[in-house]
Amino acid sequence: MTEWVDVETTGIAHGGEAVARHEGRVIFVRGALPDERVRVRITDAPAHGRFRRGVVEEVLQPSPDRVQPPCRYADRCGGCDWQFAAVPAQRELKARVVREQLQRLGGEPADRWADLLVEAVPGDVDGLRWRTRMRYAVDGQGRAGLRPHHSHDILPIDQCLLAAPDVEDLDVLGRSWPGVSEILAVTGDEESLALPDPRPGMAKLTETALGRTWTLDATAFWQVHPGAAETLATSVLDLIEPRPGEHVVDLYSGVGLFAGAVLSAIGPGGRIDAVESSAVAVKGARRSLHEAEQVHLHEARVDRWLRDTPLRRCDLVILDPPRAGAGREVLHRIFRLKPRGVAYVACDPAALARDVAIARDEGWHLASLRAFDLFPMTHHVECVALLEPIDTVKP
Ligand SMILES: C[S@@+](CC[C@H](N)C(=O)[O-])C[C@H]1O[C@@H](n2cnc3c(N)ncnc32)[C@H](O)[C@@H]1O
Image (spheres, rainbow, N blue to C red):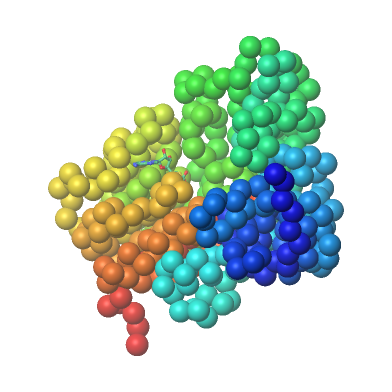
């Protein structure tokens, strides 16, 4: 039986939903902003759960930050969940989520990151047309589209406003794709490709950041926003300030974006160990960084490599794990290498916060933090943090 409730939203949750309370229980409301009055259709109500989930059916009293979504599919498509919020408000909400996660899960003092801003990627104006990589699903009639939120259905669309102009020019949505189940549409520095049912080895791309070029498999990981790779690499360099001759360990290194970025700072006398489990990414790193003798590539899982490496010390670590974060064992083994700093690039503030709490147990602390709006129109946010040993805290 469908249930509707009228609620006032008070906060914002880590998953992008507004938080409301009704009859003593929390409701996570998709499609709402904090400080709104909304009619909510309950979509998930576990009998003994502490919270329920719902979706906005009607906005009774809107927030001043609510706007008309630029995309006409916004209420049905699962691709982006915050089109109805003004872009500056999206960034404020993301900052609030990062602060709250660091406080609740990371044990950081309430006001420690009060001034944190979620910074726009240079060149981003309205939060649209930034996806250089799109994965479209194809339905039984060969029509490409996107999936609604938490659904296996396919919503045929004729335009995605987040797709970069060169991706849109591929006209994936205007063509028919019989017999295909998925299309990767991707644009690099020079080429744009639409790959039906993509597999490693089908095509290569070139990408540039900080004046260096990478040649990678079209299916390998590269940052999606065109300004993201350079923004992250610059902020990592600013945080750890690598010095000539230093030894840097780059964990979850992908095609070697950060390895390439630190090369000139550590100079010919330095060393980089880059660890990545995807064979296709390591191949891209080898192709792109082969002339740099300081770079040693390891195709391995980070936890296993850290367990088995004979390495006893290093100067700096760069850590860019997948959404789950690094976890206790990986962090413990990193800290045993006694680096002077760890640059932590995090796509999930909750995972970052959990790792900050673990770091504190191990005698480390969150010394510096920046956050970037790499995924406008969605609740996702990227953080770049610096962890340092507590005994280096200046009085
Ligand atoms: C967020 S991406 C970062 C890649 C790279 N640092 C960059 O910025 O382009 C995370 C990378 O971790 C790799 N990865 C995931 N789990 C891993 C593991 N257990 N060990 C090593 N690499 C892993 C993925 O293949 C992916 O390339």
